[in-house]
Image 1 (cartoon, one colour):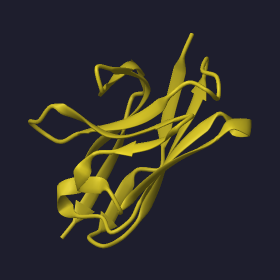
Image 2: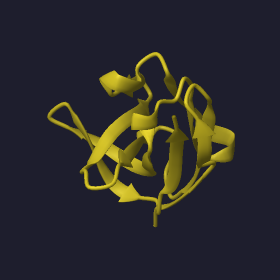
Image 3: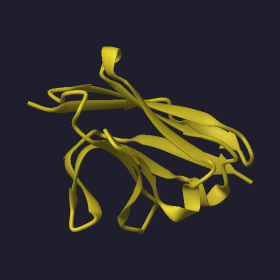
Length: 118
């Protein structure tokens, strides 16, 4: 059974940084993992994924966000720098798969709120 628990969200000023963590169980170090986010009134959108062959990012976060993993701790991270008010959302960790070039979530955590004030 896959279990994902996020932590690290909070309130930060624009230009600031946060690091989200996702403790994962039921996944191997070779399985792809990702982050999605959902702003109020909007759909849940892909943010980043990490796989054996690299990391993948949504265009608006490229150069600002970094996804990484510590296989010994079964933990996936999302380092977010230069945060903007439009990054405000609930961030979800997900066990992902790639279907026709699109990352989709197969299992989800409960999410952690990130709020960026202007």
